[in-house]
Length: 177
Image (cartoon, rainbow, N blue to C red; front, side, top):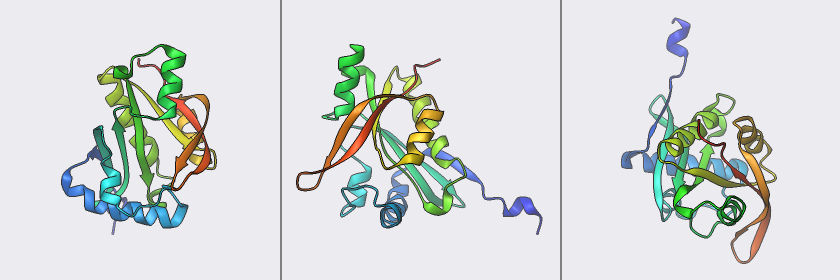
């Protein structure tokens, strides 16, 4: 067998409704490996489609969903409030990068980077700056955002469960071209 057949073909594409079930099972796998999301995933399909969803993408290798990301409208995120206060932007010009995950087996293949770039391209086309919060423990995610030019805008607490919280950092995407 020639080696190029063995090369797995990574495709990043807009999420279709048919992708949600496999994205949900990928999410459950990520949660058991990493404890992400900290909220847990009792209802993974609902978690993948938060209120205010603007767009979502999947990373697919050999017809299997191995990664996911979404952009949502701002709601009560502290990262949004920080950015609006700091920049004077209107919330109409802010999007939230959310629901990013990559299966353990698909890491170190730039899957996360390609997913984040898809959101940045979308934001550029729609006149949005993206914000996100990332838990301080997620070092590899932080390195990825910083490598792609995202700027840290503050320290926040990520609240979940029954009054629990975990330290997080807020980031804003680089300005468009």
